[in-house]
Length: 324
Image (cartoon, rainbow, N blue to C red; front, side):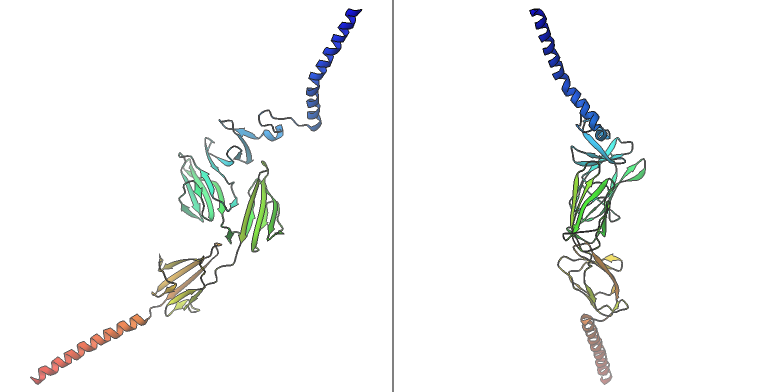
């Protein structure tokens, strides 16, 4: 009798232990069935989210942002595979972004890359800081391939009229001088002047990005004094209305012209380009005709005096010869 009782107790204890061990697995199984979620053992993310994560040789996780463009979580960089994918260009910005911070681009030494700013080829050492619209191209099988494009703006700019949010991203909020603007999921209009604050996020990584910039579309208010309505000047031309931040470029007769003065005195065909600190610019074309300035008049007076003196000398000499 005692032996049967002990046997029953042992059976009960073993059954309880088995239930204790099995219960968590059953609970996980039930929870997975209820929520229909299975976790990836490497990333810890749901399988439906981690299925599109690629792994490089160092086992670093990447997520595809758009077709052929990835985000590398470890380095915080966007990855652009080149050719068959054996080479990669990386950058801290995605294709199509507008930023006000420096852009860092890493290009393998085996690739021949060319960077264009505002349509002109430029050199770079991996970091790009100057404002402009950029396009990076690499040579693939003898052909130029566009890798990415981006825009760098100053703290104040008139370069953009709106922000087309890059593919794979969406707008979360947008204000101008603290007032919400009528943005859409992929576009923020920026035609009005003011301080814009834009928050947007990547669809796949849910990482937030920000653009804070003052929009200024007012061009420099300068005047070319001395230029008539027909675009011609019969004397010197003075550039007035310049501010300390305005930049002036002068082209005379098709060549760059340097001057330390805002007064142009030489005759010729001019193009004056004035750009403010928001990259707004105005262009003036005019011609300074040949004219006599004070120096010219003095020169001709001196020449006339010399000629008169020579003529007088000759006449005196002739008169003396006749007297003899």
